[in-house]
Length: 630
Image 1 (cartoon, one colour):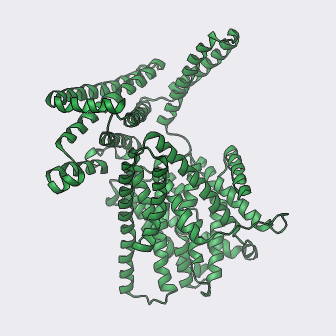
Image 2 (cartoon, helix red, strand yellow):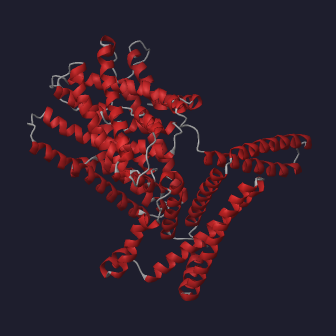
Image 3 (cartoon, helix red, strand yellow):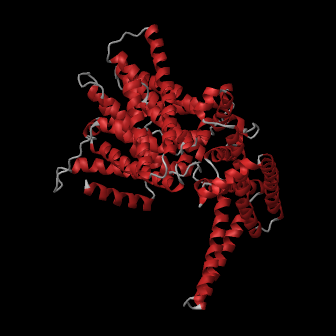
């Protein structure tokens, strides 16, 4: 195990240096060692039960990825993700099931079973790949969401098909409708269960104060426990349950962690994901037996081509429909260039292998289905996985958005200015003035180059967008600091963070710019509104612990937070103004400054009104706050 971990570090460093997918490299190493272990001077034994992968490693990897998904953005693509994960997956199953008998002569029942095994993209492989690719955030969210959801639906479809093929269940309309009903329960039941478990865990974490061990352990317990509860006790999709539990905790529970503990939890989960990916992909490579593919290459390549065709149908037909159907008009379209990458990024990995090994060995086509599955997994990991980065560049999707590139130039200028200020402090120390002057000159030259590049790419619209985007980032950072230092409470943080989410949506989802992004439609606002309404009902009021004074204080703190974060935005805009000489761009800066000045004036007048109307309440709160802060 020591050699294994040390080797993983070496591979990690090398792949990072040469920008090559880490998981693909680990897979290839496993494949090579499996074929060479007989001639090595030391024996290699690496056994891993499928239950360990399915019930431990898979939930951990899914949960880690789901923690970072913003619910408000996930919601804006939820119908598209759900459609491609259900309709698209079924399209692939039937395409593979009907074409394999015509091409390689596999019987229809066995072909349908293989279609159910192989149609879902593997979340472990896809998430690991897309972490290494710099793709637009919305595209990454679409691919991540599809891989996590269609994995759950894929397992459900496999169970249904295997019941007909292996269980000897006669195909009838009654059985089919019963299966569809079961599918609905397993899919939507998993969504509800995951959200409930995530919410309960968030509430528990809120009761714990600054205990990194307890809080981290609760997140791990949620990841593993939600999967087992779903699969064994509620008989719903463990994958979907774990994903929704992670998304819910990552959104509703994130403010319940103190800032330092949140960093600790994120670092722990990063390492868990790294170690789990290493084990899973090394194991996949190590269990491969390549000889059958060498003996019948055309047979297996034909099968792989059919699987890729099924994937293409899933992607292009599903997303073509979501782009035009009225039911999806409230969601942004998926451009054709994005569809190409969604299609090519459909890797297969652990889940198909786990599923195919659950087929009884007594089934006459067991070995053939195993080999077909391994061939497809090998091809998508070795070919699709290694060429995805090249394909991304070919489609020019690796290029940052113009507003993000403008921000990078701004930050480079700020960073250079900070270096020069630090350089001035060194003059009093024992350094030659000529050396300091030389370094200062090079820093100034670099700053000038950055300013020229900034002005060259800054059209007024992109520049204004960059100002808005970075202002939101500044506000969010200051808001977190206010919460960490107890200047505001969780409710004020919760509400203001929602407003920032929606402002960010306006920038990320430009196709919806004609539709109002209103905080009334936000899931967080609805939760807060429900809680506020509960005050009028005595039973619910007791449960939620709400009082009129709390509602007033929450409003007061939200207004104060808005005023405080605007101070940091003004500092940022003033610095940008100093480095820009273009009148049109300065006009954009002044427009945004006026907007924030309006916010401050409005918020200050409301703060003053509350302080005059509820003088005693505010004084008592401020006394209590001072005691807390000291």
